[in-house]
Amino acid sequence: MNNRIETFNGSKHFKLKQVAEGVYAAISVPGTGSLGNAAIIDLGDSTLVVDTFTTVQAAEDLQTAVIHLTGNTASYVLNTHWHSDHTSGNQVFSPTAQIISTSTTLEIMATFGKNRVAQQLANPEPIFQAIKEVDEKILLEQDEKLKKEMQWENASDREYMNALSNLDYTIPTLTFDKQLNLYGSHRTVQLKTYGGGHTQSDAFVYLPEEKIAILGDLVLSKHHPVMIHATPYEWLNILEKIELLDIKTIIPGHGDVCSLNELHEVKGYINDIVSLVEKAILNKQSIEEISVPKAYENWYFTTYFKPNLKKVYELITNPVNTI
Image (cartoon, rainbow, N blue to C red; front, side):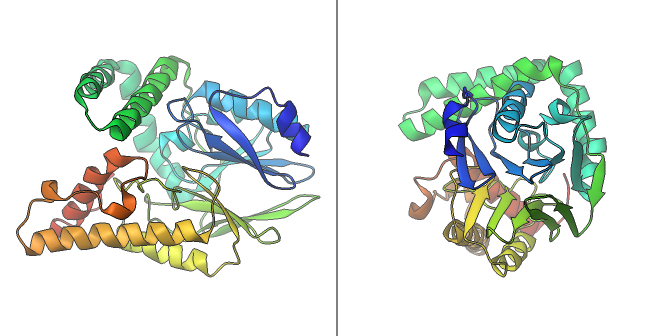
């Protein structure tokens, strides 16, 4: 089956990696229209795709990969959460595939998500201006690693904005609240949610026979977790529940295929962020003075470190849950 990957024409947006027979990770290439990872699971007589990238073009390449690897178009798509790098390609798979999410994710996409895209279409100039401002900051940045990450981030934002006019924001058509099993002739997969941690509602896929979990942004591999819409303690509770499952391999929302070790690292990161903020508050120190801990200096998504501190600070000092 590896020959199928080798004969795939490829995509600038992602690299395919076989995780098990009929289970493939589509690992995002930085600075392209993917941003997040996706996955393809051959159920035998049907196919499940997990997440759909940031742009229609990246999703079209993903659908091409699905057909090449399985001989069929996707039958189901799971959106692990509502963020645009996991949902913006939905239109490519609809109406042939059923788009699945939790009830809460659908509600957010049908309101906040839909309204945000409408505003972006009506007035894209502020986003283009923000991209231009980051370009100017990149010219002044002395840290080469951070400079590269800023370039990747801005390139991804450009890809999204350049594709925005072709975006038909497509919301899920099927929801679940705890678990939904998909039965195929080759395997059964479990779509599960333990609530919201990274966002207000996070879903994942568990393959019990293969001991594989596709966790969306609940786990990132060597990337700073994105906490802008997070509830840290719930996130930790969810990860502890996931640990109780029999898992050997994880396809994360960002970064390379990994194991429970990376799940443990994400737990450590969340605890460290909370501890750093609590200590700063206790010592009447500005969170702006907090530097990236040595353990995370080589991780990507460095630009999210300061927003993560700010988010946790706001939750501690003014605990109001907002999008």
